[in-house]
Length: 68
Image (cartoon, rainbow, N blue to C red; front, side, top):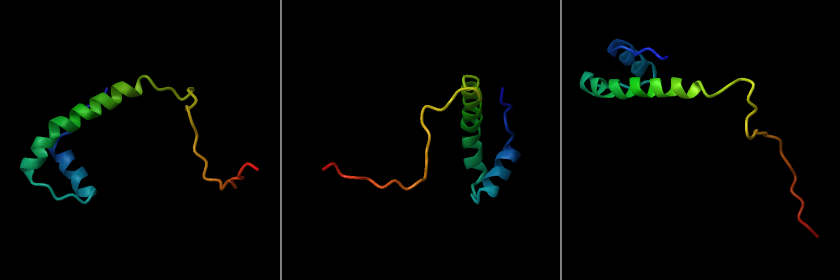
């Protein structure tokens, strides 16, 4: 399970991302950030490396041919 991040960790991450947020704003964000981290950890339990993705992306150029 994801552990809660602290106020100081959130401030450091915000600065690392180039965000200059007031302490008030960071305090408002902290509960939502921790809730989102917990939800993401719960969702990861349903995923497996053995599960093949439903779709794949390829960047190859494909020439489209119009029907005659």
